[in-house]
Image (cartoon, rainbow, N blue to C red):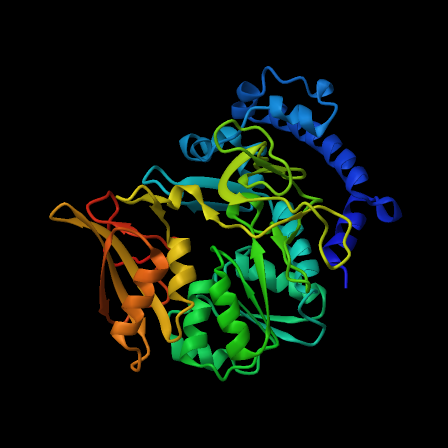
Length: 429
């Protein structure tokens, strides 16, 4: 079945029977030019950043390479300068840390209409895995108005389904009990895999994983234990939470093309790369009122698929996000280590519920120190040998076993660097 996102894009763009990759790009190009003029006329930041851009001369998507990028630090340095509406029209402000750094937090503004568009996207994305009368347990966010949980709940109501906001998995037994009888579980990969390893007898019809990098090992483990369909979603606060979602074919992400234009560019040159080549995801919002973003460098790594989705859709599809460049840590043998690689390896091993990782230097030698939360029957010799063989790095590996809570704050999973700013030793994220 073709992803319902394509029908949503056709309706939202007005292209309907004329929808194709070419007609969509022409429609997006017109919206981009409107967004440039809107932002330049209302935002102090873009009035300066886009001063040399003549939108009338942007005749193709290739001409977008002449439009300057917007960077995460721009949202941290002076977010009010990017605002395009007066303060009274801002419905929600999200403050979040700049990923991979200890700099000032970013602030992102939305009007209520901005967020209602996200709820609309969520409604169609969730219709891939849910039907009217079914119930989803939302294992993230809180009950605040226009938070992620509330937007999901609003979207589900539009398709006649129920969304119950449980919040992040702070109490595993309580979350498991709340999940019993749910048709769909929506949650963070590291928290849902903990639930899965703690209670393999749950039987949701589907699981949607979001809000962090999603390891293939986690997808496989949940699918095998709970005998359910597993979907993934890519999005970030800057995209208005929603960005792209898988369909039943389980291939790439069907993108929120009616609200976002997505490019993939070379990390160093900033030039567009061809489908099939990896680079940095860059987004331009197409209908944002409060804080439009033009060629925003997300820091996420992915590629556009060279072919269409196996579901039969005709629009371009983005492959699975493979992580963030900022999370790559050099190791002494000339290679690199990342939390994404560790997640793939550790969660593939049966009985691993969670872990905390720290890279330290002892007597001149790099040591990867892991605190592992595992089943009582796990044999240390087997796991340590598996880990050393799978990682293939020069660093010495040191393992201890203890409880590691699945939820550890709003930050994404990361490897702690001993002695680095913000080293809290207990975050594990």
